Picture 1 (cartoon, rainbow, N blue to C red):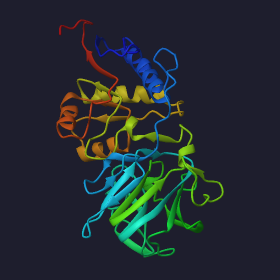
Picture 2: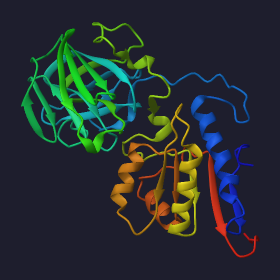
Picture 3: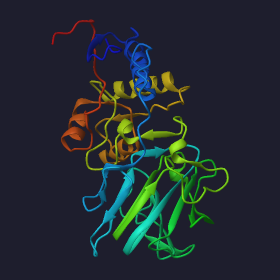
Picture 4: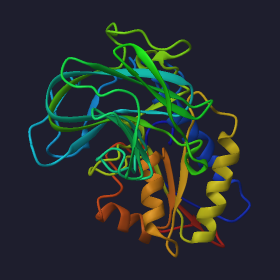
Length: 336
């Protein structure tokens, strides 16, 4: 039933193998969805989504053209930011931003899904601005060269060395940031923040103006094992995270047990990586919201907390492939 795309409500005694019965096919279903395979093994031949700036993961004043590459913000007073539709989890990748029109200021870099759109003003965003300042956590420090209209800024991310660097018209200015310990292992989105300016973002689907530094690949050539598209894991914008499966358990203890089983089942899967998380009451909801924005394909939770997240716009069911409700009872019988 699960592999066929159906929703499932099950009832079984403890120790009967119910978690494996729904957990293993659920992981297969999600794996096939992420890799473009038809459930059951047939290949749908689905093409990899096009990398572009996200139409959802942005502020209202941040404008994006239909092609997903031209970005602009017309306000002279306020910053406006947005992120790409792809999250980099591993590897060494590069993208570039060409300054088409600059009457204000441009800032380029990377950020986690839960970072502020005003790039570099919180601990989870890393930016390089046209005034030759790098910024993180609201601290602005001299770095590199100023840039403006007609210039091209490249950003390269090395998640093996945990560094972020920039180029200016092809000249490598070197690493600007070392990732702090709390962000190692996290995913990062290419990000742009503008004030009264317009830029063109190139992820490498078309030739770059300037070649990436040695050892870095265009983001458009990223291995599927190294990235996750926000359509698969949920963008960090106001639309809320969009997992591919939701598992409801009647208690916090059972939800925790189920999550641990899923972690065991999928521990050898890395292409693509499948992320699962816990959403239960009695703990800080803000932390769960941040984890959702980082990207969760499977959410295991209790009904009350899941309802709160959905009603609060933090969790979307728009892309859910399977809803599974698990009942544990003394007798394997349930009336719906």
